[in-house]
Length: 161
Image (cartoon, rainbow, N blue to C red; front, side, top):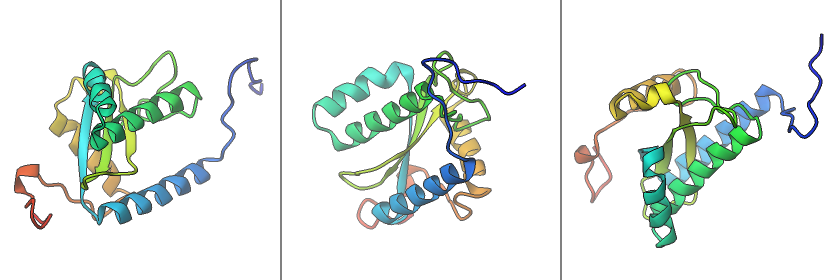
């Protein structure tokens, strides 16, 4: 029996291929802006107020983080089925993300981010475990040559590891 749309509910009609293509374009644009060097930020729900204050005070990184968090929350509210950065959990309005993994260009004033929610089960994991799961996923298709470095191993002068 076909499922009929419920009144007042947004329906996602885009085909999965267009969503993947859109993500590929975003990754290319982000890579161009970052010249290939990104920071991964994990923001848990308890940290949202601090990020909002940082953005309000004019911090460009705080602003980029806040916009990424907002994008994940809006996608869940529009039933776009955003997925956890660390597992296959899907978010909906009644099952929201409790954290967000954000990929931000390692520049002073980034203009874009890529954001992915973190489910309640994965939020209990360490940051390193979440990053490892996301990295493994990204290497399978999105970023096959992705490498990670701890920030203390990156030269602030040259941006090289």
